[in-house]
Length: 460
Image (cartoon, rainbow, N blue to C red; front, side, top):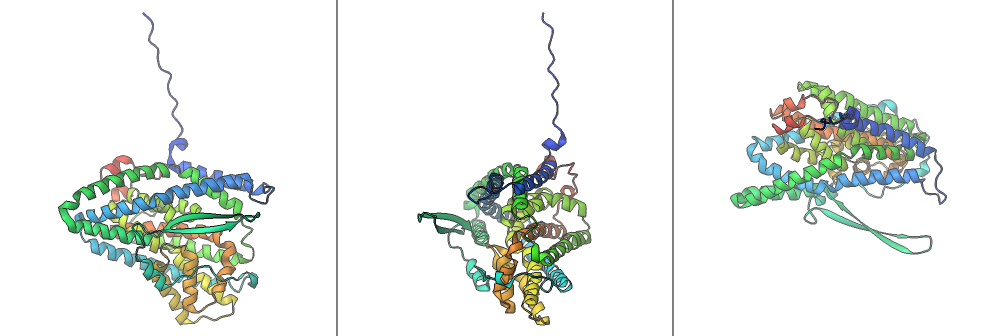
């Protein structure tokens, strides 16, 4: 009889190789290294970026594209399900009002900080930027555009744009790109969800199908999120290689003022609000961190939306029925970075650059536009359109927008990180005030991983 053989013991992988959090940090470090290497490499012979820049650009944009593709099915199914489930949530209307109120409160504080930082730093007086760089923006924000934009143009708020380009040989080529308006998608989903409730029992098969589809979408989304370390490395590498710090140049004081304002909101205002409601600041930031860092490197609140909603539900303990309504709404209308701090400082910069004195009425207008005006940029590139809305309201030259384009990518990273963090903060605070926050999940130990334990989530 042969002697029994023992299987060789398997070597467990180290924590950093299997934990999502350390993988994200590793992606950030790798991205910085790759970006510095790519920046040191010469451009291609035809004048295009070198192969490494092209590679990280393609990988990064592809990852953001994967996240963006999941936005439409996620918002539609989640909002319809949330409206159906709101039957089981007391004071649904009160939740909506509280959400909008806290959007306004945090925006009000953020714009006051932006005005104060702008007046102290005097960015327009401390610049040598060339006036020749001033150009009229290609698009501008308006209240009328916001109102008409609420009306869905088709079922999912989709739009198409065709661009015709001419090559050096004279050949013409056309490229068609699709886009979607998140606010219109919200309107459609809310209408269908309410209609399903009104129909009653006959709509139950549809609601069951929608719930099953939501579960499938969330599973696919989790697979995409697991690729975040790769996407993070590529996005930060592209940022370092493309932007560096050379672009700051003559706009150094303006860039510094923006980041000072964002830092005060991020490290001062948000922790104060969290403490005021008896919650742990450390647990909030450890919970929201995956979305914050992805917002920083991707520069897209919409692209980060699926991850923002996931961390709000799973890490911060906000009920799914409420989070699936509040987070998408926040991704379009809650922008403390783009719609409060930035337009306040930028408007002061433009006024100082052109030698225009702003009075008390002008500062009040900046506050009003920032508190309620970010909705007018929903579904668009928020910061530039929001700035044009602010400048046109104050009667300042719109050409001033062109003065700031050189540092737009650099400051947009910080703006988006603050936007995304605020979009998770407000639902958390409202849920706490309404006594529906799962504090066990909020306070759950992360143990090196930014997501709470699966058993705690399943037990909800």
